Image (cartoon, rainbow, N blue to C red):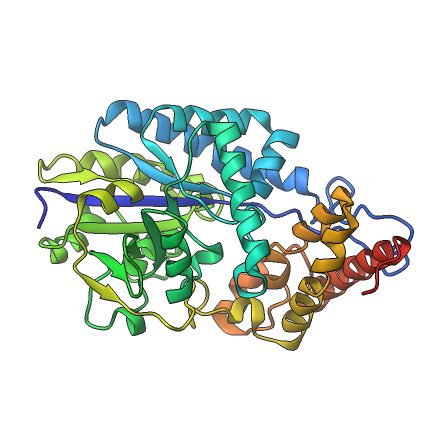
Length: 404
């Protein structure tokens, strides 16, 4: 047991390049798949400005103040390449606010795939290329090199951990899913099976989701969630070194609106937690450096942080999703051999996992969550828009004499 218990606060920042209203009649005629008229549901600039105003800018302002007010407060972020490009293009003031956070020295950036893709499961070379692209983008914009890693949607298995270990990362993140942890608690540091040096931090999904999903739900038995109540729940694990709170950055202001009191909760949490001398905050890499693993975790199956199943079914659960993904990755050799940078970039933007998430046909609670995030009226409209862009990619390759 270390001298102090630590909250590891990890937030994920992501926006995809959404496909516009792109029909089969547009294929072969124009290639601007990701452009939409202003005020349309898929307009990327409009969405980014909306989320920036509700979430990114106010959350960054709160976090910067919390850093200045609480010397022990720190956190970890991951920021996809696709949202960084949109910050540069549509909202440079938001990028600057993230740069100010990182410049304090108390905000770690976690590595991941540039295009928020599922490439690890389809093409390892493409996966590694996107991880390299992301690292170089982070170095360019923030002047730091990631030492911790998360795969897209917190997807994790033994193979991913082994890859990250051989790539030199100190730490990797996963869902703290009960069927994998068994009797173990997510509040410890672990060693992934078949690795030498890397350490595993697992999300405490119960406490994380109390904030990310249930905070403003008036039908929840624990509503309203106060900091005092939340911290009282951590007392049950008083002899465990970590409280791993992993969630989307957009939790603050976008998924949980400002009038819910979410920003007040965010600011009060570190003040109340740090009021006890035996409490602190750590970044992901710092926890890996300072703690010893409590046990070894074996995870031959793939887990994620999505849906009730916590597997890849959010993106691969139906034949539309499976066919679209397999078709897209089937173009890789021809796309890269074309040496057409615009075509390659469009192909990579189409790999972003959100496109396949929108095609999900699940029902009940999971289906409601998918519908909330989707800019399309139905999963079938998302599939049609994607496949129209895919057919245009094939047309562009045929123009260059490629066989696909």
